[in-house]
Amino acid sequence: MTSLFQILMMILGVVRTVIIIHFIMSWLISFGVLNMRQPIVAQIWDGLNRLLEPLYGPIRRMLPQMGGIDLSPVVALLGIYALQIILSNNAALFY
Image (cartoon, rainbow, N blue to C red):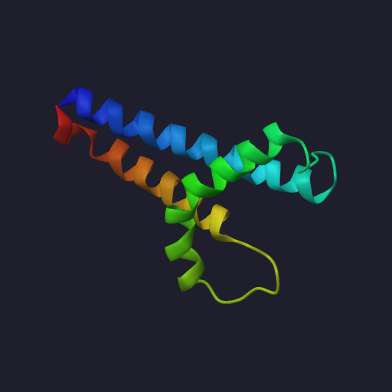
């Protein structure tokens, strides 16, 4: 059962890292640091969007319209941190 706990924590850590990379990349694209006409940038951006849309979609539907500001990555990160705290506090159940 310890392995299950560690695998769950690892998966949450990977998802958290991918969300942060997507968030930083969106800012770099917005400010013109990254050019979407470059094939590698476009492929990475499309891959991250396809990977994270199942996570962001339900969150976006629940949040009110914020006038162009997307808070779904922040809510997703808060949810992941909450899950990690819950799993850490209940780690004794996995032993």
